[in-house]
Length: 168
Image (cartoon, rainbow, N blue to C red; front, side, top):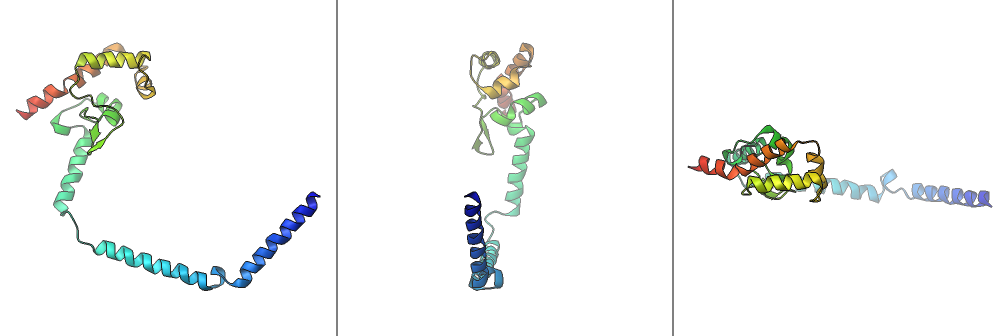
């Protein structure tokens, strides 16, 4: 019985292949190949129109935006100097200035800027112990000593003070 079903399916498959080849569709330059060629010319003309559109921003403005984005990624937003440890462990989720924002977009982590060092230290301890649920934070903090947590908390808690000192 299996052989009969397989034989019938094989015959049907070959019949469909023969029918497609005899109709001369895209394989032999039939009408469907012309549609494909038309799509290529339409796409090219749309691309040329888009490139001919006037520029919205001058080159100087674009360079300034790129420069500010690079500064933010480097960790000196608002001229606040942050440690390389903070940049490597915290800035990806909380931003380089602890604002929870980067390039005008909200990041995954909440805003840390403006919180006291004591509150941040308490939260870090709770994340490490698992009393506050966050798999990412627990994974980052599991091998960090409490002295290092205190150092992170003190650094983050000092962000507003550093910012105010620079703005004077």
